[in-house]
Image (cartoon, rainbow, N blue to C red; front, side, top):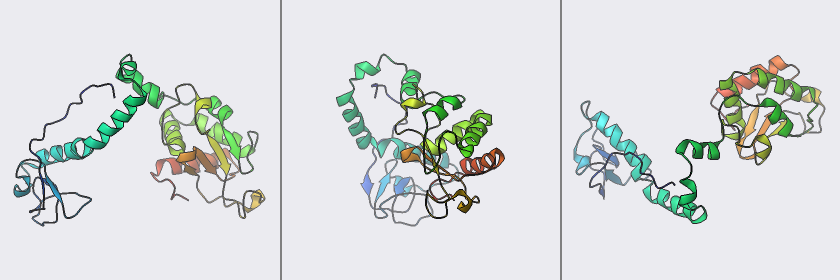
Length: 239
């Protein structure tokens, strides 16, 4: 976006054609013992001239992985990336970006790392489903998160918002607002808490910055369930 050129290997003379045997090419429907990947099983792209006729072996597999990575991350998305950059530059002039170093631009877009300001997060959060800022489960939640390690705090934020970094101007500028919703109720949000299924794990809807948290009774239960959820690698399917 700043007009800088990324370091990348040059792939000369890539051509399209039918899969011929699964060598130094991407995709294809041939079966020659090579490796390939394609969304279209009837098409292949040579990673080097004549790549479909070159078998992947122990000697050249490192080069194959390098060429494949370049194809997937650069060549295959070159047109889409160019369209994105053109659209972005139509709204933000490149000279405006050049006043920032890459690290400064990353901070501006992605926010700051480090430990979370849990007080700021709690103060800026919204609550729904029967929760309020003074609910015992909510208070226990923030106490547990404040005691997390930096790594687990950032994993918690990623779990809920899909980004591990604090917004540059603080959580009050997070859109939509971070929200803690009471979940696991037996018959809807208005049900009494003694109907809650406390065996359920916390879940999240990252598109809404929404944490769905059953009304666990203790800070220890919240810590155990939340750590299991944020370190499991699951998302919408976790329950």
